[in-house]
Length: 364
Image (cartoon, rainbow, N blue to C red; front, side):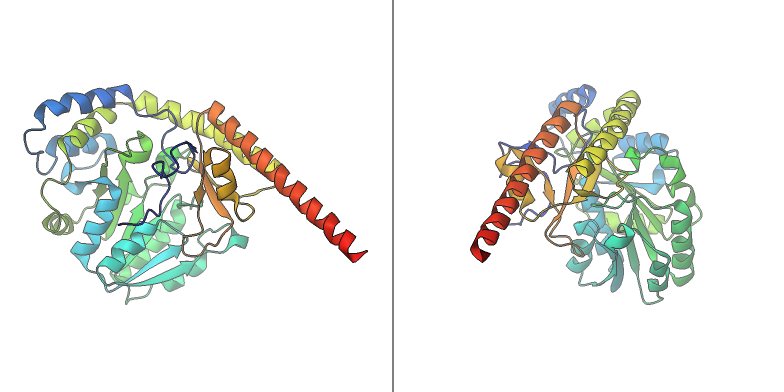
């Protein structure tokens, strides 16, 4: 059985309010649900190979050539097919970052090196990272904002990375799945660089933007069409279902929904960051639709007892027990989380105080 290492494990913790999976808090748009339901009339037929109408719609949405787009069964499938197509021998990933990068790399026997991010620097990329970009690297995976920390990196820094990767023939894979939830995404995306750099591959997904995690739909953008063809060659032909293709086309029309979700996240993220800090937790400056913080050990289990499911980040390389991530959800849900956190932390303080008093009594 495949071990569950991500958030969203509601099947094990089914009585909990799920803050571990960071999707759009507005829920799946009704138009997407309708499109998915209507597509069931054609489930006796094979899905459309190549996803031409969907790629056309994505091209219009992203303002890039549809021939430079590849669709997958979630962004995760594209990460794995990219590694199978390239077959890198040596790659670099930050620590911590999204687990699938390393999993996909190791699945093709690639040697993975870590760029260890430091807590005292808010787990942000520093200039020293550039020194790790050596000629013997084949691939580099980066995520902006990073997952699970939510730390956003300036485009100028990634331009330096891209130029070095150009010069040293390194494929730069940039995961921009969470850029939809930052205030000025156009200031950070590398999309305009695609036509200038064939060694740049951008990852995006419908999962978070439209709360479509169960449908599984992602896409990649790259000007290297030979690479895209190699990816298609190592992927089974019907990897994107009829339901997913129909849902994706409908979702791309939901511009007002996306903006409402963004504005909600901006307001609620500010509220949660301040409130969690006031409760005494160490909160990092996350700029995505989730918040990364440091709390007491055992906090995950305490939250489950309160009916709240958060993401323990102890299984990320570079992190240990005591680091956690929560999604930004609806105001009433966030208020419930804050009340639960308050009760847990108060109990912890009382327990510590009682232990201290007992120790003092023993000394006497």
